[in-house]
Image (cartoon, rainbow over all chains, first blue to last red):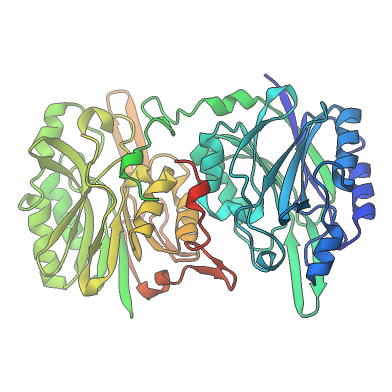
Length: 265
Length: 265
């Protein structure tokens, strides 16, 4: 089963939703893929200054500007997309990602492990780590940015049956890209980490986003890693079914060798 | 609280217990440390050919040749040691490690995740992931070699209160040393990985051990990594209490941010 998966890296501008969406549409114009992952909070930017700002950029998950554009693109390009956005829900605002499919279906993950000042703006996600079908039934699990440092995130998605982990990020710490090789290897899954680039300032706060978006195979090998500054889309062809093989040697299986009864949680 | 921790790397010879123990004694002669970690199956070598061979090199955990030597060395050098050995127990043979303290106490961990043909020779460990006091009350958790690929191993030890993970290995796969940086970082613990070097042949089976023994700090930074061929002991001074601080930013804590109720296991 062949599947073309891709990652998109670019520089959003804070609070410029229409401009950022137009840039993504333009970047994605010539990308032919079955699944493409875009960054966390891709349309809004990241370094908010007030609750009011966050209220202003929060979007309805079904017919906000991000959902509207990506439903159109999904149909137009026959592609599934995963993109991060600020989700306006009844009980508050979440740092979420949506999987948007060519059949018009939308699935939501709300970020469980909020990073730094996100705790001021967002509610802790309550969707759990679920698996959703992307185009052609490819099984996608979503996690967002800082979820990476908790091994339980990728483990939960793999145990739930993820073939591909879709991982929108706005990374500023230096460790994630390398750690994701271990996440892929220990779980036998593909991982697509989409990071943004650029700098955001807010008063004395300055964040430098580290780029280096990447696609990693089920053995923890980098298929492609972008540099720290490029704005681009990269697409590669993989077989998602490779993730069904959890054997690491002829005697060892990543899942069957687990000894749950001896683990602490 | 200052604590001198060390790692010993060398080339054991298969089935040559006395010779290997003599070599370790000689390597450790001038090493001044509070805790030193040695490789997995350090006295026996690794690539056994028959159950009879394994029976022959299996040792009593309290007064076998390894325990006898290291109890003497622990007293003589005022040092705690962690060393891997084949443990002769009532119900079978385990791939185990012992923590031997200057006060003559010995604590055992039996390997839970057996690698490759180890499954033919050893019983699956049943001690679980426990924490033991080394010299000066430093809290040590043991895991052995292939345990590294299961994030639950280091996680269990960290949750149980490990300040330092002592990790005897006989590594042949290429991934572990780098993955241990993630293990240290995600758990906020020190990790001492002691690997052997050299090659072992047994019929058509050939194993090349990868050396690169290392000590990693609580932020996933390599304090020291040996090369692929050296036989030596490296000692460094650390503060084990750094592992008590699980904050990763002023808003984030590696343990308190965990959302157990949303994880699969």
